[in-house]
Length: 277
Image (cartoon, rainbow, N blue to C red):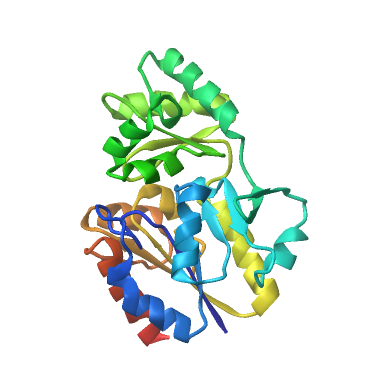
């Protein structure tokens, strides 16, 4: 039986302010001892996640830019299943990883965000229009990491001057008319041209089943764009006080709720679940 953990990063495995995972070290080590898989599922870019993948030391694929791409190294155990996937997924090499492209390319998204901004009559400032320094200020990232956050392939994060329910609905409708979608993360709206994190996670769950047979799947997240992929796992976990009501509404499976966000809550949740298995 293979344990597979699918985890969001910001304010989940990573601290929302420091971006450190060290408070989850005990749970990470417990997963290693059980030879579990740890699959990162994040809005971050390939450039941002690559170093973390090396630092954590797991050899599993990861999902980046809200499900726009799946990245893995060809020597990874699941690579043969992913490379032979049917129907065939567009594949290319980037930064030492093989990338399966599940979404519309970035240039098209940037153009569409400009059109949507004009249509709704509100300036929508995407990362493409921001400098490294502006992204650093908006995210709290160091300048070097902010530069990596702007190296995007499938997802355009954006901010708006004043978010209202009406404005968000009009933006979503304008995106839908273009065959796109807007998902809400912890800090930004994200314009995407794919089926979100859940599609990528569903592909990986099937690949793990082909490679390992029986699975126990765990998912952890902190924001609404995590809920669709959390519905696919055996044990979904929502971190943070603000998600109690939303998680009940969005998740059909019984959900573990931990008030403590970030790696401290992640650590306790994973240790508790492992102890119960």
